[in-house]
Amino acid sequence: MASTILKRATGSFALKSTILADSLRIGGPYRSYAKIAVGADIVSAAPGVSLQKARSWDEGVSSNFSTTPLKDIFKDKKVVIFGLPGAHTGVCSQQHVPSYKNNIDKFKAKGIESVICVAVNDPYTMNGWAEKLQAKDAIEFYGDFDGNFHKSLELDKDLSVALLGPRSQRWSAYLEDGKVKVLNVEEAPSDFKVSGGEVILGQI
Image (cartoon, rainbow, N blue to C red):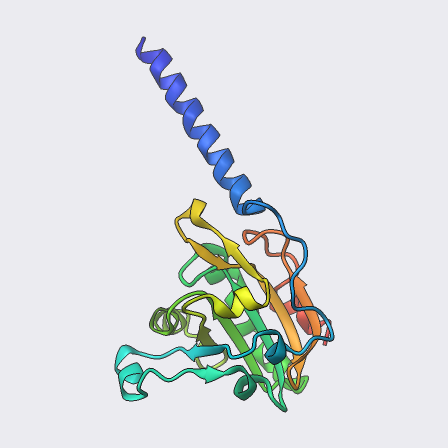
């Protein structure tokens, strides 16, 4: 009897693990497109949207919880930006951010003025994570605390199955004066095939 219960429990765990993996890969109805596309203006695609520069709570208070309009981030600049599902998560910490941090000199050599990481997190979480990764000197970190940036670009993703709630796709882009020149979106947030630093370096 105990053996039968164990087999049932083990089978149930395996089924749940399979469902979790499939959900992370598919994320519900899979959308293979986004509102933002090569040639689009990112500021026009997300009108009125601002991001929140990574900072400590005290810095947030002293700045009166200021936000940064997209035009101030992208206007008259060559920018590489990458989005990821969330701070302190596996692929994001171990692969995605390091692929940009470790290649920052190569980005600068190509004339890139800013390399930006954005996630659906508050700016305080992004700040603590950036400090933990020792990446703040190389990469600018921004929070998209309410997800409006990613929703506007249709790069949002429901990752409730992993207890993350509304998040973003894993993606990267190269922009000149706010115009998208290169856009890479992973098939699934758990993938790391097309959005890494090495890939987009070869596309600039």
